[in-house]
Length: 483
Ligand code: UDX
Ligand code: ADP
Image (cartoon, rainbow, N blue to C red):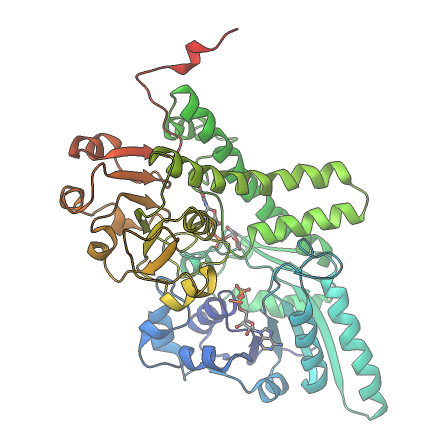
């Protein structure tokens, strides 16, 4: 196996490949990194002079791109050449849930992984280390190996020299804090059999990560660890979100509960923020994958246990749209509703599985006119998520539901009946709600699904206010219960 990696190729210039390669380029100036993608527009955006046009928004990413791009970090569509040049190839392509065929709605669609493996087998030269970065179902490495081996057998008859080692190196970074997570990971996990190849990958990470933080394991444990880590994290969100409903009914405050339970070291304080439900490209996909694998092995109790985590998440999103309709006199038809935030979390422009999509769709279905403001999500993306046919300007007399993209908070809230906070962007905390109140129609509602505003302050202005997991503390419904 090759020593001293000098050339890395990353297939897939998305939310995983882009930031991961940017950080490797920053920490390893002696390595040339080529990120390739079949999407020409995406590559153009990565090469754009204007850093605001980068295809993804991530705090700190623009600075790294500025300092490394065209030095040791390159973006291109020249897949063939960059595969041939590479000593090590990262596969960072998308692996969404299958929409049709066997396992539809649960299993991951591996067609992009498979096509990457086929491209590698066609173009790679000499000995190459293949690193799985995308989140993949267990045993995908085996699929990659088989594709590489079958091509290899053919090539060897033509005396072209190729050899491969396949490693699993799942990415644990979160969007919005990707650069920080990549620069200072809790751990780096490497799974594989080829000890030389593992050493090569360890050597790359040792440029900035302590040796103690690098865990090595077998391939399957590594692949499965990624799915299980995401399932555990998502389970925490569904657990706390399920309790928001109980707090609202009984007059408790979920924030006090989170603080109290999180102070127990065994539970821990992180990942206990209640909200409109988890989104993002990983959680739902990975749990459904786990459910599929468990079903496949006949572990029905295990699969239905994890399925519930997804069910609660869907229920929480529906619960919020129902609450909004209920509070607005049971009808939102013809009403203007301001949506604060469309990304699945703050500090990213990613909307994949964002709870805002399902909540906005529900409100459009109910006939409301929603005005969406998000500091980083572009109109084109919202159009992809909500559909172009309902993208219209507001008219109070119109009972058909519409959405409209707002460039400013003022446009969003003018004459609105309600604001719904769906993403916890910090700028929403700092707005002048006194002024906003004056511009809205009465009664003016705020629905804080992220729990970022101070209820006392907002109510003192004159708003009607609902916050996730905050019950009415004056009336303790608990004591109304009949034992
Ligand atoms: C997740 C994992 O955290 C990461 O390790 C993995 O590599 C990819 O998937 P990501 O989806 O980017 O990362 O973001 P994360 O911070 O985990 O948030 C996921 C969702 O949970 C978001 O919608 C977020 O708003 C929600 N969330 C998170 C909460 O509602 N409350 C919390 O306390 C934390
Ligand atoms: P992730 O969040 O996993 O990074 P993204 O969808 O943001 O997912 O990025 C995956 C990228 O992989 C996309 O830009 C897509 O065009 C690219 N891609 C998919 N298949 C291939 C392939 N065979 N060769 C090159 N790029 C690919």
